[in-house]
Length: 276
Image (cartoon, rainbow, N blue to C red):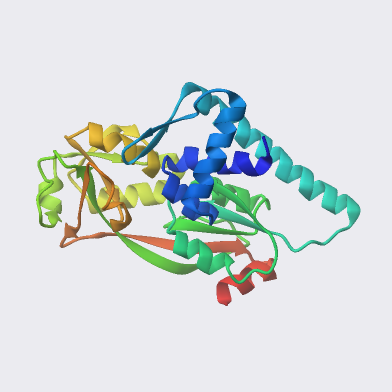
């Protein structure tokens, strides 16, 4: 198995959707599907279960996801230290790819870089930590987020969130949903440790909702919601076409996500990309 194929598999395993993973990798969906099938042939068994609206991991897939992340991190580190030992100053951009970020935003930020872009995916908290430790050059984060001294950030985009729910949910009508209607309803949200300030801001904006004990990322939520007609989640309109789910805007007080680009104050190359 090639490292490239490992990166492809990790993207699909994290997004739980071939099209979103292909957009993240900037390749075609058929190409990605062929590469994953090649990996499954080499393993000798299925890694993913295909279903309407996305995929889920088999037990073998969960094992490969854990080990592939370790292998890819070691490979990236090996390249970095070898280049340093050789005194080779190859212009490589180490970019932090936020889980669920609009693909167009990633292309907009990295498209002006003339050289290889090494992408590391993660949550706001994970990417901010890697940036602070000097492991990444440039990251996209969801605000609000606390950054350490020496880091700079700039607003790059906004995205309005609406209510995403099973087509069988009581609120899955044809019109917008009000905050009052959401009061008392169970909401699935990402784990607080992945973006503490944003987590608290969402709950404050939707005062009265019941926070589900199940915390999960956006990709996992898409797989769970069709099975839970009494639970809702938050998503941009990009998820409106997922089979079995209904997306509705929030009336009066919409939840707006702000994306920021962050970099070290000493990294002129990263600052130049954001300014361009």
